[in-house]
Image (cartoon, rainbow, N blue to C red; front, side, top):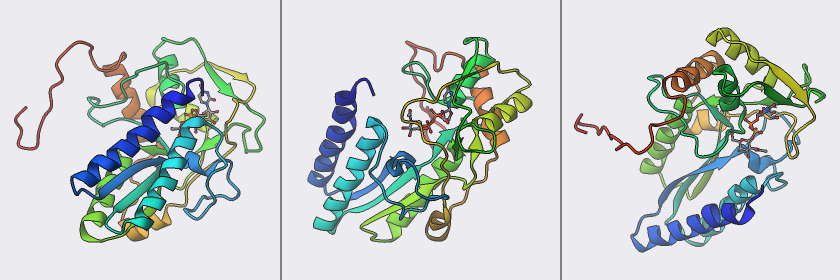
Length: 263
Ligand SMILES: CC(=O)N[C@H]1[C@@H](OP(=O)(O)OP(=O)(O)OC[C@H]2O[C@@H](n3ccc(=O)[nH]c3=O)[C@H](O)[C@@H]2O)O[C@H](CO)[C@@H](O)[C@@H]1O
């Protein structure tokens, strides 16, 4: 929120440049990482792809929305484009090996990484933003999705694009289940055998009360469903965090393992 121009520069101009370069190389196929933030405060739950978009509460979400609008215009004007926009709900977890995960580039603000920092003793307390929401336990509800399920959603999208000319299609990637902050903390504590001290404070500006996906369309058209449980999201994230408490080692050469086993 503090650096809107940076978001617009990176996301909007970056996408504009990418689309132009793609076109100049006759490449018209794209899977776009969109976000459930394009829906804003939901008018109904679960959220289907037909839910209105645009009433967004933060700059990051607005860039995703503007890009979707740009892709709509582009695919309507030039029929060669073949694009799938995937609206991610809340991605969490890590690769089950513990070797691949989120490398922090700035201070964590998202719930699961912050909670893990508290469990590691790097932060004293988890600040819970609001316990007066109109939800069963008063805390915010989200649809957390394991990054491995998210990755599989991309493979399914690529398969669809490979075999069909879709123009532009949009799919929600979520589990369809809402989980509160308090519930996620409880599961995390249980499966990692840690204790997360909580401090309840007032709501965070721009936060949504509750959102979860209707992912029926992705199931029917992409043949994709989620497989990972909330427990697995927590254990896999914890494995990554304990194996790599500061993310990837800095100033070392990254080893890339390619399909045939060479590196
Ligand atoms: C306002 C904001 O930054 N929104 C971003 C955030 O959404 P979103 O707010 O859904 O995700 P978070 O992980 O930041 O928060 C999830 C839930 O945990 C609560 N919470 C979070 C952190 C914390 O320290 N304490 C706490 O109580 C939040 O109030 C919310 O109810 O991540 C999404 C990606 O995953 C982005 O698409 C959203 O643009």
